[in-house]
Length: 144
Image 1 (spheres, rainbow, N blue to C red):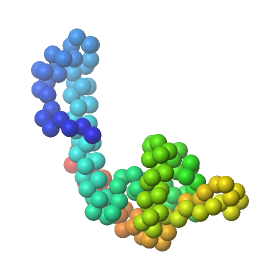
Image 2: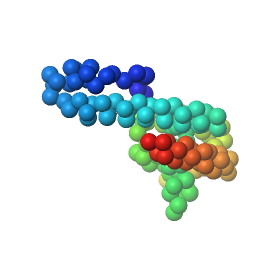
Image 3: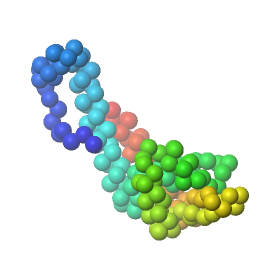
Image 4: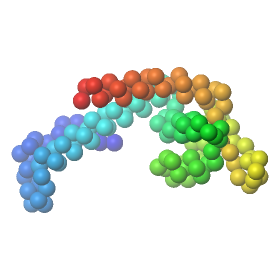
């Protein structure tokens, strides 16, 4: 998150950037982008919270669902597609399973391996969440 509400003036950026040879216009552009991204993430997180999700829980559901030729993924496959540590992924999968949004079962081909799939409730939650999520993203791009 980027917590700075009021961005520095151009003069301030020029003063700080000059000794380092940084382009003040690029620095100001990056700061604006970071601020916009932070506000968007907050808006998305509030939206997900209203739907009983977090950004990470949503991403797990969509990563499983976006594999049309497969009905399940291993926890490791999910972790490789999402940029979080394995312990965080393990806790997230456990919470999704507790909320009956996914199932975690032994793989039929290798009993040592687990398979994660969406439950009907998980698929419904994803389908209920996607329209508003895409609306937020679309409106953000229209306004920028």
